[in-house]
Length: 333
Picture 1 (cartoon, rainbow, N blue to C red):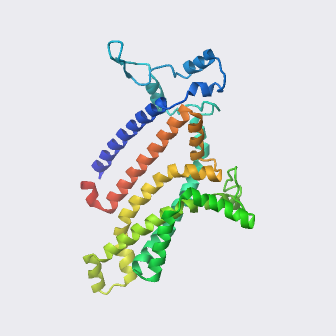
Picture 2: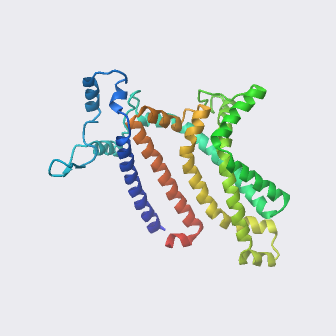
């Protein structure tokens, strides 16, 4: 098991390094001038923009190795470069400061992380509470009206875009009943539990509908396959109750692929919450990242992309370990 975890850690570290290089490079070739935006934009004297660029180190080479097509030697080593400066700060725990607000990125993440985490936890809870039981019921009552109803609902949930559903959740109650959740501010659960749930439950349900439909379909298909296995027929021949067979013997094997999909959905929600946070005016990490991208704030975008990438890689590592714990054959593959 330790060798399995060690291999996964090495792979995860390599992925994080590659992600940092790609993120850093893509931001540098994207249109726009971060120094100009940091100077306030508009008609700014060139000298002021150059001074801002020099202060932020944007006039240095991008990477340690640069390639020049005109001046020999064509490949040069640059000890003083932007990537090493940024990476060394990250290793020391310094994520930098936002270009416009001058607020440390680590402080912004610390302030906004609870908001995004609450939304993710509520969304995953909705996904599990609706998806897994619906899949089990649909499999146990195969081809019955209940099964057909659940499958129709799952297909409908997968067909409706989340951003459209979120818009309807805001518009329809406001139009017909004059109701709207708290918008434009983040209400703490400790300060006002009712307003907090009013703000977070609707976007969590919107995000969880499509995710629970995917989990339902996978749970149903996996359970139908497991119920046809030899050990299940043997358990039935011994006279065990059907509920005991399903929940003690079959459901554990069913959860192996379901856990994998839940982990992928969790990491996918890190990006999907961006649009939902914008629609519901939730000031979480997604909203923060959107503002940084719009303003071309290199420091924030780099740090947030790397932060999300690390969370995704660590989540996948946790999934692999859980997968190997449930099915010991995985660790030897």
